[in-house]
Length: 99
Image 1 (tube, rainbow, N blue to C red):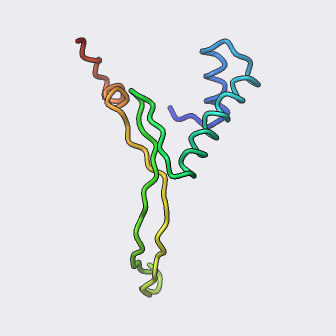
Image 2: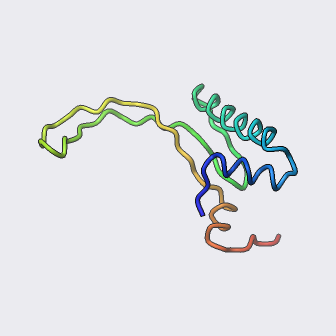
């Protein structure tokens, strides 16, 4: 089951008892806050879920698939997400180990 933004907002509203308007504000604020941190070169770590960070991709050469022409691809910053152990375990249907 994939979710788009509207479906995510509906799920947040249902699970928290918030109105859809308030849930939309919360989801938008969360996304905006993560984006602002990444723009500044920072990272956001949500323990158990994962870490959002920025990766500096180096300049490289590529090929136009139609013509075979060699192209220069400029260096740029790209967002990166590394899933946390709890998320990986949840995706793989593993139960959390008890300590």
